Image (cartoon, rainbow, N blue to C red):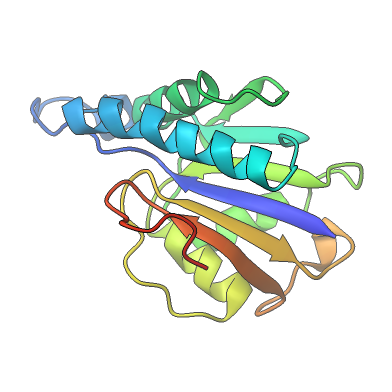
Length: 173
């Protein structure tokens, strides 16, 4: 069984209107929320005796890179190096799905840090659930029924865990 963790990047800054979108940094709330969500993720992993991912990919956008690094600092289980890729700088869920379907068969658990609406729409497509708004720095743990990444199908997954910074009860699922 394959597992996918989708992470929406933390809150970014719009202070500099001349800054290219790809270069936008996290704002104060984002730099506070990402470590907190990293701690929650670490606690969830330890509580469920779950290890880290086999593959950790992140959008190359500054806000996604910063989110990934801040979360990584809080994770106590072993994780691979984060791979930053321009291909994840997308707002299209079909692009994310295409990447996922090309993962190597040896990958059992993958984490992706990306952007909305791609993260939210992909989670809904995979699980067949209409989700509440997926806020910045949200974590969505999804268990895929497909034995191989290339066989990932619509409504072929289960939402196991959904958490976000303002959640009053971690572990919505």
